[in-house]
Length: 301
Image (tube, rainbow, N blue to C red):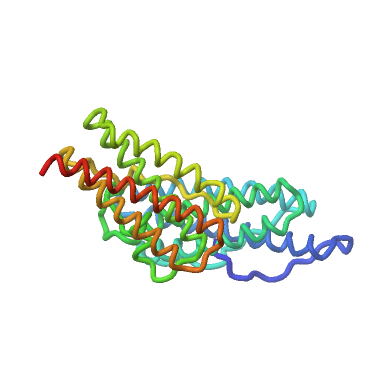
């Protein structure tokens, strides 16, 4: 986080140039984590709800863990302790702070993946890859906070998650498409879990819930292949129990329509052939699910 370029660092002359660059990058990451820890303490203090405060403090704990891991890596590489600098001042207001944190977390994901890709040591590669996944999850939460007015609790649906996020985005990168697709499959499974828990066994929802599990398992290798960090599954936060089984079928219809529209948009763009094949398969499955929900809804008319 807070990834403004900090000045160059110089180490013993025996180090190879790529080692020097790696050490510089790790020092930069340490400064970013150190700055984020300080900023998130302030954001937690300003948070308008207990839910938001607790989540920001949880994110802050993740950053403290990252800082400890990066410190150990730095010391092992250099034999020296790193320095600590606040690189960029935290905004003074909560709204500006979480918007800033969202942007910064997204930039940090790319930076950590670059370090992971360049590092030769498998431990360093894995530590930064895992940290990148954490930062992506943090970005999702800060985006969530930034899209709700002060005082909103964390159990409301948002328009920046899953298919709705994909359909409202002005531009889409491949990592974003894969992330939105997996989020939407998470959301569908959470929705059907809630319906089955509240209304008991319904064959259509049970079968489609199992299909959503297969969809998730189909997407996971693609995300790994293209080095896309797994988004945190926060779908339960967005699920509202329908008033009736009829309303559950109607929600299923709308969910599949959104899902199909999302995949149609993805397929209209230039994407790798293996991703196109997977998106086409999932879109066709959603067409079948839509027909099943429409048939179920008919019996209530």
